[in-house]
Image 1 (cartoon, one colour):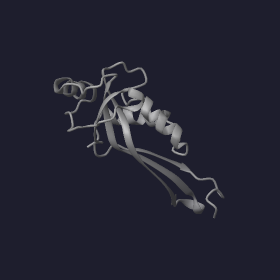
Image 2 (cartoon, helix red, strand yellow):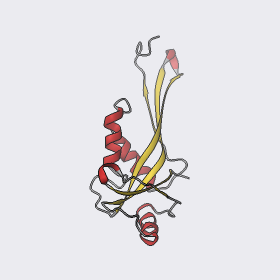
Image 3 (tube, one colour):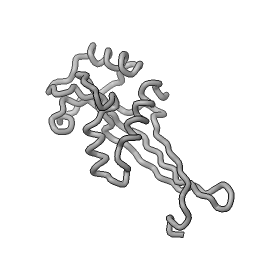
Length: 146
């Protein structure tokens, strides 16, 4: 189930994130910027911890037209208690998910290592089903090696 507040936040993050072609820059970006937005100052922040990227060339249309389709799906999200070494208390976590994302707090697994560059305690959980960023564009002739 796609959550009405989480999907637009994920799309906004993906719009700004470096291309999947630049793996190091993309990984750094996703560690630095939360789904909460660039100007977030909340004690709790939500990050994309793991994602899957799928690129396909789809034939169809008239005159051999082809489309390149890119889909990005988060597999795991990290809830980070910003600049704190301990996890947030259950009440704060529940309030954060309810007020920020309009959803129940998912079961989270605390991690031994802090978030990127000592960003704070992190707990991870599986991303909600249906959260997806999908883009298609026409593929210019001769770019696929055919």
